[in-house]
Image 1 (spheres, rainbow, N blue to C red):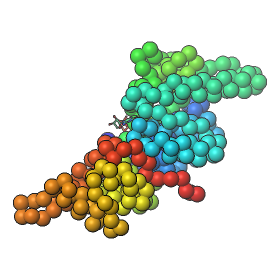
Image 2 (image 1 turned 90 degrees about the vertical axis):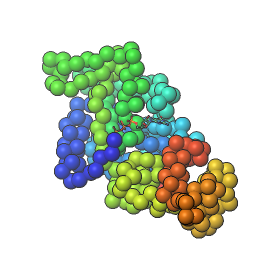
Image 3 (image 1 turned 90 degrees about the horizontal axis):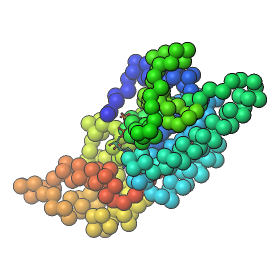
Image 4 (image 1 turned 180 degrees about the vertical axis):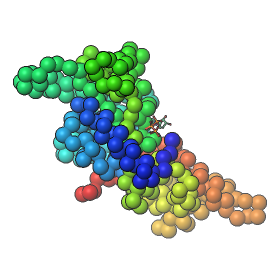
Amino acid sequence: MNIQWYPGHMTKTKRLIEENIKLVDIVIELLDARAPYSTKNPDIDKLAGSKMRLIILNKADLADEKMTEVWIKWYSGKNIKVIPIIATSGKGIKEVIKVADDMMREKIERDKARGRIYRPIRAMIVGIPNVGKSTFINSLVGKASTKTGDKPGVTRGKQWVKIKKGFELLDMPGILWPKFEDQEVACNLAYIGSINDNILDNRELAIGLIKLGTNQFKEKLEERYKVSLQEDAYESFKAIALKRGLIKSGGELDELRASQIILDEFRAGKWGRITVEKPKTH
Ligand SMILES: Nc1nc2c(ncn2[C@@H]2O[C@H](COP(=O)(O)OP(=O)(O)OP(=O)(O)O)[C@@H](O)[C@H]2O)c(=O)[nH]1
């Protein structure tokens, strides 16, 4: 799903998230492991306030393993727990439950010390479109859990899913907006297929991706297309199109088809496992 963010839509979403965050103890923020900065919402720190936080780097199967470690260290340095997962296969889900369990125990201790009565720990999942929120909820919920429904005296109108004893999840994820005003972020989101292709010119995008690849993951790109990459990304783009025989009847290169193929293959992980950005001092 692609959402065109306009001010009205953003205000509504923000209000909904603010309302829901009040009801939970943990905010689980999903990022795409291929772009852990670009897929982050710019206002999440403010929105989450003092709630317990957990960052999930999803689609770890498509990201560079070493870079995922680098990103984990980077976010851990900011005192946020980070867990890489593959929501489609369920890899890492047990770790998520374990960490949530530990957080729950800490909270119970704190509550006890304050003389408060026990209640289940509640979490909600947030993230920008396409990071895998629904897939993650499904894999977390699995078959064993049950919907707790609207309990009297509990939040009316919300559906809570019991993941395990003492741990409940709001069954609707919070959809957040990306830092769309940042051009580099917009390009990274487009490379990984997280924003609508219609917004950006595919040809420019494919050439941009080749440029990025030439700087950051040259071998993988050369291996995939069996071409020597040039300094000028457009020259490399043409060489790839030619190698693939993407020529129109008049003999011209079919640049549109080449662009689509390059983007599709990258997004499907056919260039190998790639992370498009490194931590900066953002
Ligand atoms: N390779 C890979 N693909 C994944 C993973 N998790 C989700 N996907 C795919 O990513 C796409 C988006 O997943 P969704 O679960 O619909 O994402 P969402 O965040 O709920 O998306 P919105 O409804 O747009 O907000 C789907 O095609 C999923 O199959 C993963 O761990 N690895």
